[in-house]
Image (tube, rainbow, N blue to C red):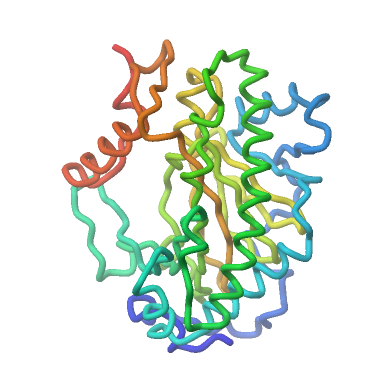
Length: 335
């Protein structure tokens, strides 16, 4: 149920009414969905043994691809979306109060970081127009909620997290093998203990130019795995200086590479630049899994000076504090 009380106060300034003469079920006029043949590379998880060249091309030239035959039951993907929708439809105060004791946390209207070093939160153009839940998968067993919908969602996420770990590990090992890397332990470079899921809700707004659901960025992760079941697009990636819409396709997952994978691959693979636009008549719900290296594992390459993920994260936080934006891997490039 969409109602104003379900949105956090910081997002209630938006016009949540659909444009005139446009039904909520009308997808024909959604200009964010491409009419042309979808250009995004497709990787079949069950055919990785024979598809490593295709995987390499996707990682080098796109940094993002669709994953099919991934082994996650379609019923689970649908249940996650439906349960997330029910959760987000609750009153804002209920959602906020449900996470007081952790480890799941609720967030909304996160600041857009500007090059001026400010992170304003009052004007619409200075916040990410979203709300969400941050879920550290290793700590889900410690979480109990008085909200039945959140407790059932937790049960689904435990099952989903097992699938995500399997998929991430399988993909990473295939990438490492293709790159001919001699890593001491793959599990240290993609530590399942770091896995988190962020569940996002992007409101619909009749004026989709009011701001972005999520600002232009790259992920700091090794891999990110996105579930965007449904028919509402919004995710866009930057390819050859043009924005390409990653439209939703049922029962597929979106894999995108983050900064850590670019560093581990010695710059051969691409950390993809992306953003999320608002849809002008339907809200969008997505679930994204992020996984990182262990904090103390040293990443070495010819392009970047040796660093640990902990050092990278600390540097990013320092840059955000002093500059107002993430610099990322450029900080670690060899002279």
